Image 1: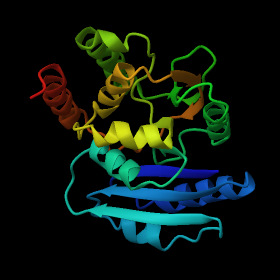
Image 2 (image 1 turned 90 degrees about the vertical axis):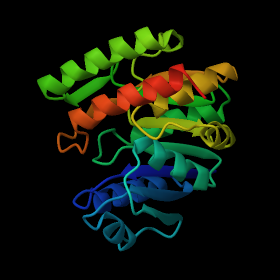
Image 3 (image 1 turned 30 degrees about the vertical axis):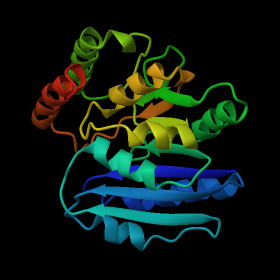
Length: 237
């Protein structure tokens, strides 16, 4: 089996080497051949250069995709997935937020043809939260979930659309993301809607999650992105 792991990054110079090393060790320890794709969305702190200097084990290929400008997380994830070669493709946020054993659980469900997309969720009863968001980000997250579910009723069945841990059948991932056009925060809602239109089997999975409070996500551009991308999704041209 071949697994592609995409890490979307923006100014993560202090974390990226450890991210790559831990994922490389995971692949090796589980006898998985794969690639780690660092999709850099316009970092100015040398993230890509540090990533490129990180040592990997022999069964792991490292790919660095670097944009000179900042477009948004959706753009970074889409670019990484469209460059991927794996039978199974996933993306995971920088900062070691999710325990890597959950990758194996998701992979097994896809390989056993139980589902074609596995979505990590922090809001299922079985999920374990080691460190929560700070209170004001938790409040923004609650408001975001309410607003997006009102705007997009088709996602009512999902408890956590924004969790940065998702695993896909590789062919399906590349097809869905080739049709995506949202560069910002709502790209995950766009992909979920496209998947539902094609009756693709999806399953939310509880995870063990630790908040990375050194986040690059600012509340002001996020509000702008939500308004802009909601308009694009509600009124496609």
